[in-house]
Image 1: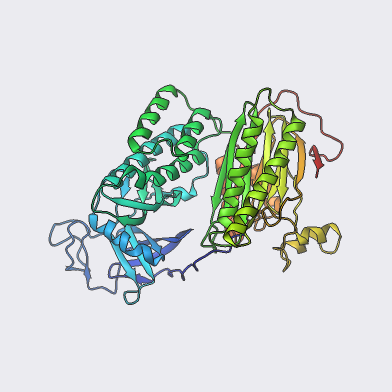
Image 2: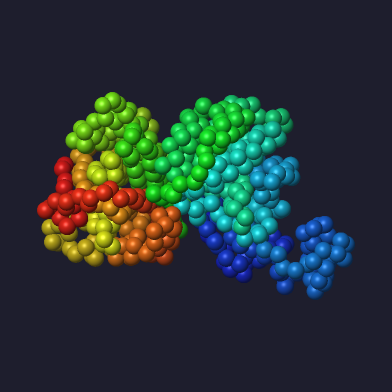
Length: 524
């Protein structure tokens, strides 16, 4: 339910000329604070053509090779990004002027303001060689790729720090993946460029953000790596040298790749400029895992804060109370889940009161116990689904005005999707002290698949299509990507977040309770 903060500028149209060199081919991706385009240097309106090898500008447009260095003047393609945070224009120009080179850095070949008079955008251009945006990679990645990414990312962060480049933040939108699989930093968000190397304290926040990215992309089954990257996220490796040593030690212990059971992905959508969704997963103790999706409300410095607080608090409280000896029973774990929800709710409410705003969030979570029991809980309209034997079942109930109207037979489910009041929620996390939650217990069977998502998915994609996508592949990462694409095709009006969770063989299939064919029982 992102409301965005700074309006996204009007997009460039295909065929539009930019600067003296470029023509727009297509808008290829939207991200928070960025728009990415493919452009080329085929400019029939220009009488001369620039050579990108030597910089000679006076080549006749019809000439095939540079008259200065002999290089080919065939049409070249570029990846162009636009930013519109004006306070970051000058630092990025200073970064560009340094002309830094590193194997893990895709350095800009051109940076220019747009329009030239009273610019509202800063455009950065890099040569395009069929790189893919990391934004389009669902989590997790095979652990070998995560480790390779960690090594390259830590190396480039160290190089930037040595050259005085301080980043405002680090996000997966700042990385591209070359056709050979190498991760490369691209279009960094530069806060300042100093005339001296940065101190460890100055680039420690970037290291923490890298830890968060690595943890998100690490398979949940890789417990040692999850722990290492969580430690990094918590600031236990303040320098690239500290992290590099820990990374090397863990790599020596790791011998083989494992298949991934779960996948997750979040996306800003096509219309929002801010992603207020958040998600998380964690192993709480032996045999107990938790998965969380939150959809924040309240706009910049509110919605994304509320959703992150919800995820972090829920996971932290659950871990503290479940990771004890002896391990709690399922009924006690269900009570712990309720307590963790209340703690998250009251933490957000206290933060909102301190800030003087009305932030809040929806929240859906699933705790899986011994791959046999799933405890699904929700507040708001983020949903939990069960896919069993090729059929999609909605586990959770939406706490929305239109859902109540459907229950009262005042409107149909189809009418609810397009109802003018479809965004009115009757329950949210963080808007009042204490909150009523619904908890559903699902007895799992071999081959079950669980899906948690924000309304950015189900609001754009019919349940029948979600069912089809979830049953056409065994690859959860491919399923996550396809679900996000389907939401884009449906309009992409909201942020989109999805977690796909697989249940392995559990021996004898559980007996389905009489309540529903999907094996659901509920409380709350």
